[in-house]
Image (cartoon, rainbow, N blue to C red):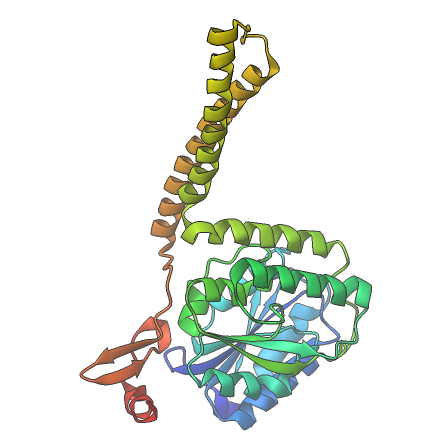
Length: 348
């Protein structure tokens, strides 16, 4: 049954499933079995990329065994535990699919709902997010922090998605172009939205863990807050640090321009000594702060430009390409896909 699904590295892959695992020996077999079964029924060429994030139990041994039974499976073993975002980044870089589906390996994201995301992606979205409904987790530890974090993300990014974390499907070329850092797995819809990608949403089931216990706790909420703060900074003024720091510097200079003329007036009209007065010291500190802020803006501007150039990061997402009067839906690696042109053109 599984042998028929085997494909060579050069074959086109329509769907890539990516899932990080850390000490998931109790879930690994059931996860791979159910995902493979769904992909078999879905009838599209697919691969399953599971990343062992430095697991210390039998996870890697089990994945090695499963790779012989399930040809779709590719297991990636990291040398040490680097965290979910970095493990996810490693997995995405090993994918070849037109669509990349990101999901947890503890089966809280139901493999049976993969077709929901795929069918919605077929409508031309850059990313489709699965918003969890009727969550049974602890309100204080999981649901309330999640509500606050999602609200902040919507305010910061303008992305309307109700549930940013978890189950999602991303266009392959976009997924592989992302420079994911620690914590970015929680921000993917907002990041793609800020790059101009069209975002969709479907409702998915919030199932209980199949086995074992969660690796997350209440302390993660503080990390999420800092991630959101960093996203706001990166998104401010179209990712131009100088625009943000320049405005702060100008505001400080404006305040200085109010204080200093008043002190000079007091000095020359009323003969009030200004050198030892607190407002004069404050004005000097504000002026020096403005210089520091301007310098920081220039340095960050140069670093940002260098990083984007070296990393090949594009601040945009191409949705369609029009050529000879036909709309060509963008396919793998961001290139126009002529094979899809006629169906898209007729739909338009």
